[in-house]
Structure formats: structure tokens, C-alpha cells
Image 1 (cartoon, one colour):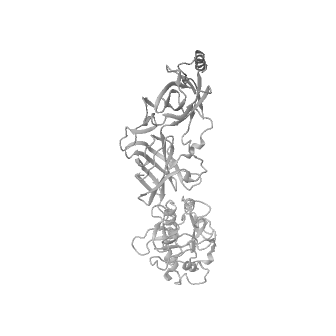
Image 2 (cartoon, rainbow, N blue to C red):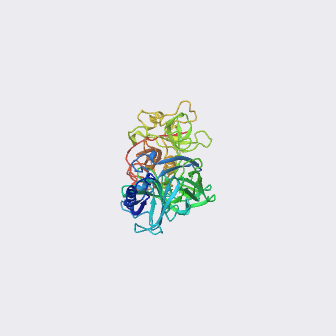
Image 3 (cartoon, rainbow, N blue to C red):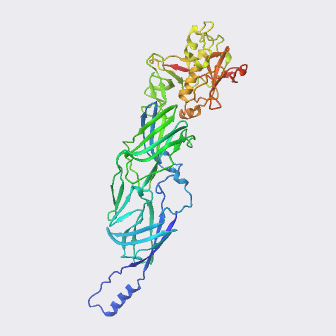
Length: 558
């Protein structure tokens, strides 16, 4: 911080010495000497540049409750909801240790009030941090007593006792206010001003669980203050000159690209570089954030309004804020009672509640036809891997030539006519994979959940559906020889979101076959799902290598 030192000569008015009308002349001489010996005293004014949020504890290591001022959610179509958070701007802690004075060169005015009455005015200029008195008064004649001092730069309009700032000057207007008791002695006394920004500022951050781009507007949904006036006699503020509704405060029609994660979170984030400067007492509920367009979760959004109509918070003087709008995918879960609820966001049930434990991530919604919905179990059957010898020796009967198109996992798992020999795959020793499908060791549905099927080993096409809809993977290739490889998804982000549940990070068996072998899908050690056979013998066909022992993740219909 820079401190501007202002040395001003102050004449302290003598306190009358009471005396009797009959006092002798030598006593009068003594009183006269007391007055004459009171030399002109000096007040040193220090003007300290106070940064935004300087009076708040803004360490980035503090918990979120220390910076979060409100939080709410808004439903958006396309299975997306927005969480809006107003928080103090913690990035200000990274400001340089040496910085130029926030108080620009220009004219400054110091006002001294005692008991609500103006007792003196001093004008001057600041050039290269040096104050020089320029008005006809080079000093202030103040009696001893307690004063309220005001220091204003030239962005503050002074009219009598009114100190007025227009919204257009909210960024640069500064006022310092302090109370000081002036005494007859000592000769040198100091008055400190903390020069605060009159206005506050807000900028918008957009976040999501995957890279995206967006363009936004920030509007005045309702009329917001266009000016604020400080009554120097009382220290009270009044608002006026309101801006019209729907005034655009910020428009970023160019795309904001979110390509990197915010530190310590699974959120891809982009912050608008421009601040909106407003006056104190402006209400957050009078703002409207409009997402002009965004592409996220393989969906396109346009003209989405985020309306914080119930937020009571008011912008404070010298406050700096981030209005963070997080676009979340509305992941839905299948619960033990057979019902489907959001896992996060509005009406969410979390990991468990009145509907029992979460047992699956919904991939496809139920269309009204029994068992038309599909969900992935929240965990593997066990932490073990299973060799190909634990898969049935009899192959699928009538399997599609392209495993990408195979979505008959329940059929291959449970139906006798699905095998080439007509023998159900669930027969045999308790260690076989198909047998284990009937007794998933993680969580099963309640017996009363009659709308839920048995667990089954998913087919390759069902795994592809899961990667597309839960991890927002790109479409798979059409070639049956390439199967599915090197196609981007956000599996790692999905694992971060579902904290505390079994992550998807392994090779998994599917119930699909090709070339007489079982197909597996890779979700481990990279961010791109890939499929292949449990053998290296078909590498020339472009399928690639995969282990011969894989994990098992069941699916379920509802």
C-alpha cells in the first residue's frame, strides 16, 4: 500500500481563559502570552490505498463458508441444472506487494465536521503521490474537539454537505472517512484515511464437469441504483437515478473457453475477464445472468436465464465478488425401492435416504415400457478379476456382427436360447461370471421393487451407451473391426464426481462376442475407453491388445 503524506498547518483556536473583570493587568499579560505561545500546529494526513475486500479475511486456504455468501440452484432443460454461488473474490490475495497508488492523480478534498457541522475544507492535488494544497485556504482553523474527516477524490461530486457518486464513476471514486479527536497539544498530530472504493465489483465465472464454451450477458433485471449520496452531516446514504430494467451491464458475445480444471475441483472453469462496477446497496436479486449460448454435455444451450430472485444480499462498498454459475449434468440414480431420483441438485437423494441406497447410475430412462430403463451398478461384483475361462464356453446364438450394436446383455446372461448350445449361462459352478450375476455382492433392490430386473452382464453396445451418457464420450466408430478406441471421454471426471463410490478404472468383461471370443472394454489407465478381445491374436484386425483377466460391472433394467 502507498501512503500519501499530507502536512497541513492547523491553527488551534485558543480556549478563552476565564478571568474576573477585576483581574490585574499582569494576569491579562499572562493570558495573552498563553495565546501567543500556541504556535501553529501541524496535522499529518496519511492516505492509504485500500484494496477490494481489504477488511475481509480472504485467504484461499479458508473454508468455503468463509467466502460463500449465498448458493441456490436453477433447473435447466436437457438434464442440466445450474448452481449459482456468490462468493468473495479470493484471487485478490495474489496482488503484488508493491503497487502504484490506487488514488489517481487529480484533485482531492478534505472536509472536517464537528457535531454534524462543517468546520473546514481543504483542497489539493496529488501528483506522483505528493499532496499540494491549492485552494485559497492553506490550513484548517480547528478548535480542539472530536471531528469526522472526509477525504474525496475528484470522482465524488461535492454539493454542500452531499457527497454524490454516479455509477459511471463507481470504479474510480474514492472516499476515506475517519474520526479523530484534536487536542491542544502536542504540536504534531496525525489523521489516517483508509481510501476505499465507493463502488463494488462483480465478475462472472462459468463452470462445468467437462470442457465447454459459452457466451454470457449480465443484465439489470430490475432497476438498480445509478447514484449514491452520502450526507456528511449524518453519515447516512441514499440511492437515486435508477437504471432502467434490462440494462445490459456486461456482454461477452465472444466465447469463453473452459479447457482447464479449477484447482482442487473436478470443475472446468472460465472467468469473464471484465468486472461490472456497481454502487453499494445494489441487490444481487436485481441481476440476471443470461447464457446466450453454451455447448456442454453434448448438448447446446441458448438464452438460458439464471435468475437469483430470492437472494437478499447487497453489494458492499469496496467489495469484490465472483458470481459463479456451475452447469451440472443432472445425473440420476436408481434406488433400492425401484425409484429414480437425481443424485445431485434439486430433489437429490445423494448416496442414500428414504428410498434406500443408490444402486445404479441411470443410463437410459424408462420410456413407460417395463424394463426399458437401464442403469449401471455403482460398483463391481468384487475387487477380483476373472479370467476368460470363467466366461461360458458356449457362444452367443445370433449375435450381431458388430459388437457396438449389441445391446442384448440381459438376453445373453439369462435366456437359455441365447447360447449356441441352449444351456443357460447361469448354470455351473458358483465361480462363473454369469452365476455371480444373480447375487451381486454390492447392493441389491428391495424385494418390493417389482419394477427392477435381475443384474446382468452388459453387452458392448450397452457399455458404449454408458460411456456416451455418463462420461460424455464421442460417438463410436462404425467399423466392427475397430470396435471402440481412442475416443475421448471424461471418465476421470465422472470418478471425481462420484466420490466415495467404486470408480470406473478397469478392464471389464462384456457379454458380447466376436470371432468366437468374448469382448472386453477398457476404462483403465487412460481417459479413452477402448474395446478389444481377450487375446492378442486379432491385433492385425485393428482390435488391439487387452488382458485376459478382467473385472465385472453389472447392469440392471427398471
